[in-house]
Amino acid sequence: MDKQIKQLFLVLSLLLFIVPANAYANSDLDGREDVFAFLKKAFESQVSLSEKSRTMKEIEGVLDPYFTKSYKSRFIEENVVGQESEYQTYGTDFALYFIPFYAFSEKTKVVEMENEIFVVEFFPRNTEGPVGYEDHYEGLKIVKVNGDWKVADYLYDEVPQEVINKAYPEKAQEQQQDADPVNEENSTNETFVFGPNFSTLKTFMELGVIFKNESRTLLFGLL
Image 1 (cartoon, rainbow, N blue to C red):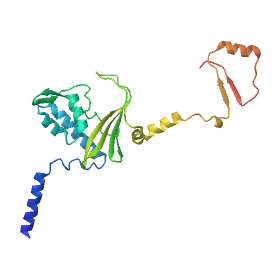
Image 2 (cartoon, rainbow, N blue to C red):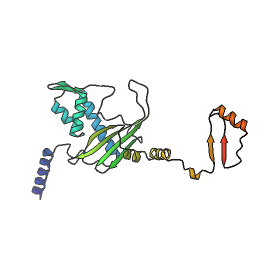
Image 3 (cartoon, rainbow, N blue to C red):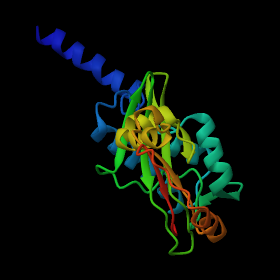
Image 4 (spheres, rainbow, N blue to C red):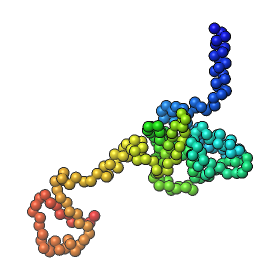
């Protein structure tokens, strides 16, 4: 019996050496807290590239557990500089393809779709600081690649409307109400509103026009 246990322990130990350490790290994101933890690690991996010079292979190895091949290539092209074996990133006010500065709170929404996870946050207009921007949504699209979740796309004000509707149902309802046409059949009165057209007002007064139909209202005045 002891011999069998030792053999089983030996097999498990060999598996741990053969299978990469990150193989199971991102295989399952169970709920928003797991998603947030994953994105924080992804951001830390990007930031760590400024700490020292690395080879391009080393840089790709740092990013690989968290980003798809295409996303990783775009990030490197946009942010990594150097030559030969001396590559790293440098700080900037507006770095593309970095994980956004999410609040990671109730403001940050996680929307699970079929085989996709969207992380979205609304950023209100900002005119202070070196970089200003209008109201917009920023989102990340996370997909499964060979069983592991990885960041696949960065969405700056290009978040699918379906995702926004699920993330912010109250905003979707407001937009729907604003888009609904006025139902004239339910209106009991027909109202005409005239702005500051004094010649029209004078003409009506001179002619002594009187509407006796109570269902119609004529409003004069300044708007």
